[in-house]
Image (cartoon, rainbow, N blue to C red; front, top):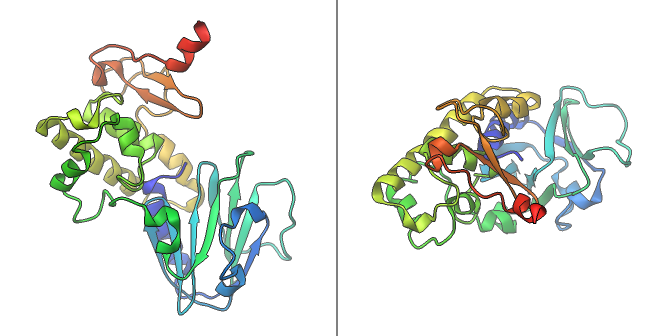
Length: 287
């Protein structure tokens, strides 16, 4: 799933390629992608792109004197830029193409989604706050006013485990499964540790890990073409998606805990005092 750093890079890429250009056609291929109907997609046509913004993992393409095109790429969605779009309208079918946006220059982008779980979402709204997912977002962790005091206030009284708290978009916007693993590894903390149990020193360590991990990922992604962002993300991860590989910090083997629809990765030596965490799904299978 694209998270804050990748969506930030996509925002910058699209701002460079879209702002000042006119949207001449928006062509839906998979009706499931559309989450609003009024105003219609056609309301975007004939308007110039004024700005591209990011809200958590949401991308907002704002038009001049017109509606906003807001999209969330979900787990398997992606944006593909094309300097020259194919001639003729796209044909609905079983492929991954979900929607196409064309500019007056002949360039534009496709939104695609792999797999069978169709969660890619597109909204056409007068204000991004009309999108429920945007309206419920917590603060952006890279915002200038997101200081350690505010972070500590968010965690105070949080009875959830750190992994779940970091991924909650209403608590902190933009962090998902991959970067929560990376942040906790950098902070040397167990994903199962209760958020409310952190000492001031641990809160400081986690705050620094949060900001540093995301900032470094944004810098790695900056200037990378949209089509190469996924590979760039994977290359920079130290523990997420690296089960069985040596930890780059201590050399211990990266372990995994599996859930019904996801998994987390961690280093026992760096994060849990050398003790492997119980893999609840595997435990049930072995009974």
